[in-house]
Length: 434
Image 1 (tube, one colour):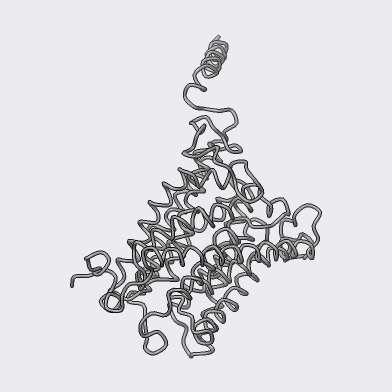
Image 2 (image 1 turned 180 degrees about the horizontal axis):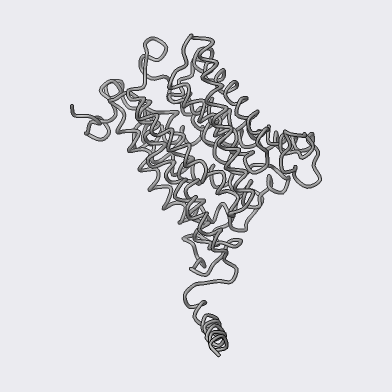
């Protein structure tokens, strides 16, 4: 008798839920486990920028510029968030052309509590993608650190987000022309790292060198702060890569594993190179190698296996190390915080290597399989097209934006302001009062 009453009660509750669920915004299409994981991943990716990247970059500049870097990262976070909701999300993910999405979802028109994207709420997907739109222009800060006007940072970040980031996102993840070709970019080798790296390179060339570059040491003022930020980046990167599976499943688990392995391999490889060349491994080299490993595995993280990831991380440590030396010592370009040789080159390398180690026919180095109908050679052709198109488009548009902003409001602070430090001259504050 009690069992029958329990069954009747459960049936009544089920019928009641059929009526109230739509009013509460519940949907049978929503997967609770996947939603919980992407909510967590969203927090982790935001944690990468604030405070992770802000502290990482802040420690690398001189003490007179630490607040300026923190302020730039913080302000870009706010600016990118509002622009993403206004038009960025729609340009990236709504239906449009092969080049850019339309404005049908501007200001999130038509998006409500019951809206879904796949099997998670669309609001969660929007917020997750927003954190990518935040960190990408924030990465560019490292290319022009210690010598740019705050107004120029804000103007460039706003225009660049809409003119570069949103269209490239549509190409790769929004159903655009690179997605149609079968480009493998799981979490942002092209969308995030190549675009940010190339923009930083253009910025470094346009703004010119910092005072004293190549003539005197410009050491980081607080490597402890940088180490703390680096640790936050490493942890947050699990949300970045594993979260890009958009599900709490085996793909996310493998993406997390290979992300960790590549970071470890990149860190040790960079350290060993320094140990051999200079007699001692540096703390700065260790964290830079770790970031190189993370950036390089990003496009491949959902496609490769553990052994392939270790090769990618080792390659990142070697290639990014020497690119950093060449950029500063051979080409004499002052990319202040090594954005292009670490993120840009890492994104290029990882996007290319994804076309190899994604193959399921490499024995212990096998991955999850290439795009449908692809061989390694045909996949590499697509990867190279994606790399070249993203590089060229970002370089040209970034150059135009810097030129226009320089003419309208000016890019670089004066020599006296640079010597005094941007904390005082741009914000009338100091980072330390000891």
